[in-house]
Image (cartoon, rainbow, N blue to C red; front, side, top):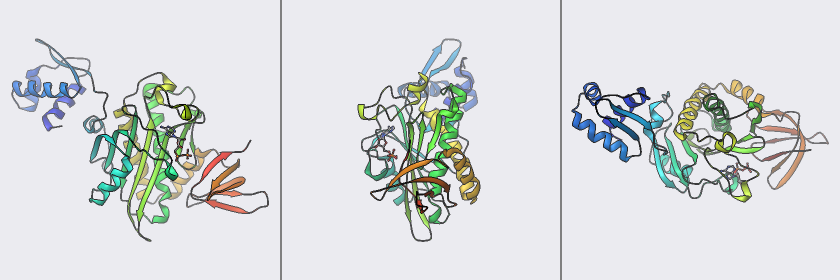
Amino acid sequence: MNKIDLEILKLLHKNKNSYLSGQKISDKLNVSRTTIWKHIKDLRNKGYQIESITNKGYSLVDIPDKITAEEIKLGLKTDIIAQEIYVFDSLSSTNEKAKQLAGEGKSGGTVIMAEEQTAGRGRLGRKWYSPPGSGLWCSLLVRPDINPTRAPFLTIVAALALEDALYKIDEEFTIFKDKNDLMIKWPNDILWNDKKICGILSELNADIDKIKYAVIGIGVNVNQDSFPDELEDKAVSLKEISGKKISRNKVAQTLLTVFEKYYKKLLDKDYNQLLLKWKDKLNIIKKNIDVYADDKVYSGEVVDISDKGELVIKDNIGNIHRFWAGDVSLRQ
Ligand code: ADP
C-alpha cells in the first residue's frame, strides 16, 4: 500500500463514526481532491468499505476481513518486532518462508503471515490445520543475542505473550467467561478448557555459542466455525467460544505488541523473571503426569521447572528426569 493510502486510512480511522470532507483530507495531506478520490477508489478495491455522502465527505464503515500489514501497523507500538511485515495469500508454512527470508538476510523482528498454510506444521512433523481466512498463522524471525542454551526461552516468551494477548483481546471483546479457563500447557500450547486455541513451534539455527536466527511460529484459531472431526474435541477458536467474529489484524497487533514486551526481557537476560511468571501459569507443578519423550513414557510428579526451562519430574523410585520437550498428559 502506498503512503497516501495509508495516510488517508489513518485519518478515516481517527474519524470513525463520522464524516471527513474530501477538502479536509486534501488540506491535511497536501494533495488535490482528485488524487484523494483516486486513492479512496484504490482502498475500496482493496476491500475497505468507505461511504461517501455529498457535502459531508467520507466515512470508514468496515475494514477488509483480510490480514494486511497496514492495518496491523496502524495500531502497533513496537520498535524491534514487526518493523517489516510480509503477508501472503497462501504459503506451505510461514516457518518455512521465515527460514528462507532469514537465509536472505532479513533482519530480526521480521514477521511473516499467511491467510492459509497448505502444510502447516506442529512439533515432530505433526500437521497444523490452517484453513484460509480464519486464523492467525504467523512466524516471527528473531536474532536474539543470547546463548543458544537459552533458546527454549523463546517458546516461553511466545507462550506468555499469547496468554497476555488473549486477556487483552478479552478486555475489548469479552470472550472468556472465566479467565481461569485459559492455561499454558507445557511446553508450547495455550488451552481453553483443555482445547487448544494456540500452538507455538520454535525452530532454531545456531552455532554452539551463537544463535544465527530463530523462527517462532504461532497459530491462533480466531474465526473458525468448526474443525475437522479429528480435531473437534481438541481444538477451539475464539469465535466458537464467544460467538463473535474477531478482527485478526487486531489479534496480530495485540500479540506483536505484547510479544515485544517479553522479548525485551529476554534480550535483557531477565531469565528468572520470565521463568517465575511462566511457572506461575503452568499449573502442573506437584501434579502427577506422563511424559512421552524419545519413544518412552516417563511417569512421575513434577517437582520443578529448572532454571533453563526444563521440566523436572521425579518417578516413583525417586529418579529425577529432565525434559526439554515431550508430550505431557496429566494422570488421573
Ligand atoms: P501437541 O499438541 O501434540 O503438542 P503440536 O504442538 O505439535 O502437538 O501441534 C500439532 C497437533 O495439534 C496436531 O497433531 C493436532 O492434534 C493439533 N492441531 C492441528 N491443528 C490444530 C489447530 N488449528 N488448532 C488446534 N489444534 C490443532
